[in-house]
Image (cartoon, rainbow over all chains, first blue to last red; front, top):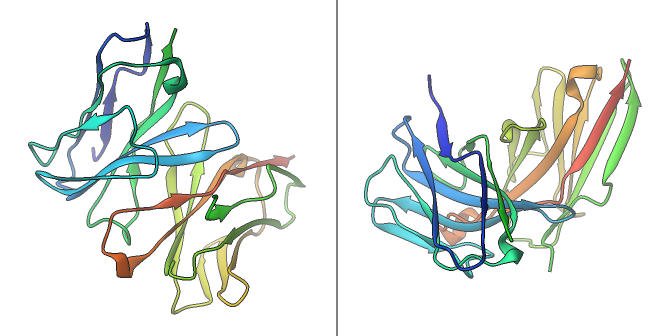
Length: 113
Length: 114
């Protein structure tokens, strides 16, 4: 089954404790991206990757890191999480980027205390 | 600065009637637009898209209209069904920039009453 898998689904952590949210897709998509969803703000793009080893900032990259060492995986790293990073995070992939529909994972609910 | 705006946070319609969800944008360079639907506890799913060379695209009960001069697009659902109750996001991108940036609106929660 074609899918985007993110883990974990729920995560509660404390300020400053490094964490990684994993994202994997099995559709051989070139493009992958991370979003955060906050009430009243919709979905905001954090980082995206057009291909392996190619990543770029979205609209809200501060406090996040990503890497794209293989085509299928695109982990999101929070080196020193803060409470304002409490949010619902979605990973997505698509065949070619801006003009092809995104396939989203089911989300990761992160709480930073 | 919100480049893509969905000014109605919520909309309620009766089953069988038309649902119209609106989206405005400010960047005239946007040339590709998409609508996504999101159910609780799931990721958004792609619904329909439109390129700026068109002013209408239809897929079954769903039609998207694009008015470039007004920088406005709308999603029409006819007839609306209770299963359409979800959050709807519009999104826009600028193909000429050759980046992967995709800008989403804030979302509109649609409730279709039986």
